Length: 95
Image (cartoon, rainbow, N blue to C red; front, side, top):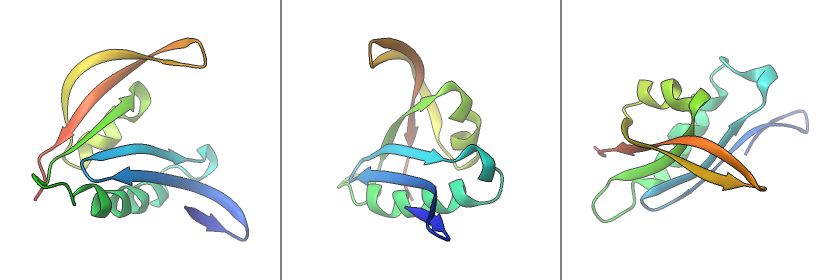
């Protein structure tokens, strides 16, 4: 979690082989918070035996992840609270 003065700026959740979630508060976007969280999450996710990492990106986050070396695998939809959300499944090849 990233915070400043008790305010949550964002968080990342990762397990070996997957970035599960990455969130950055809208008012601190483009200030390096997302990049720092992504790098921290990758340090955990790259612990997978093959070193590869998968994630499901919302459409607004695809460009961000591409800048860090993720590539598109396929477009899909997931259900979140009874709402169908378009996503892009992405892959990071590892070091």
